[in-house]
Structures are given as structure tokens and as C-alpha cells.
Image (cartoon, rainbow, N blue to C red; front, side, top):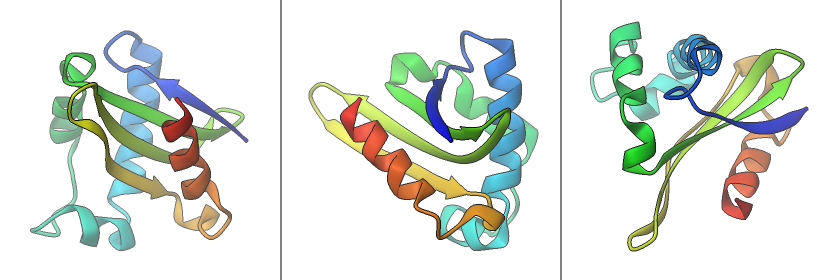
Length: 111
């Protein structure tokens, strides 16, 4: 497993990979209950909107990957004045309890 930053604003490949993984990871019922007040699943239009101008907003996406499969995602906001804020951490259900979320957060903090 490796962790790398995906930049959907700069790369169509990154955007497609993180879009697909985001829809799958964030819409898992155990994740959705913490992320959606309405409990309605996120759709492609909503997730694509998250990617708009994300660099200018200080949003960064770090993904844990095994080969080409994204196992988990952390979304952070980095601002030199306001600091560091975790927007979300999600791991595919079949990979939970393996320390992937912790590794994603530790990586984001180091960066």
C-alpha cells in the first residue's frame, strides 16, 4: 500500500479515480451517517462540485492505494493562517480496522 496525493483539478485520470472511489467510499452506510445530515447518498454532480477550484481553497486529497485500487481517502484543508483541518476520512469497508485511516491522517500531517 502506498499513499499519494490525487489532484483532480489537474488530472483527468486522478479526477476519475477519486470520483469513483469517493462515491463508493462516502456512500457506504457506516460512512454516510457521519457525512450527510439527510443520509441521502452523494451523487456524481455533488462530488464533482467538491473538486472545483479545490487547490485555490487549500483542499488536498490523499489516497491509500494498492496497485490501482483506492482503499481509503482523506480530505484535508490546509491554510497558512487558519491551519490544518480534516474534512473527511473514509476507508472501504473490507479494509477497515487495518490502520489505513490512521496512516492517511499521519501522512497528511507530515505533508
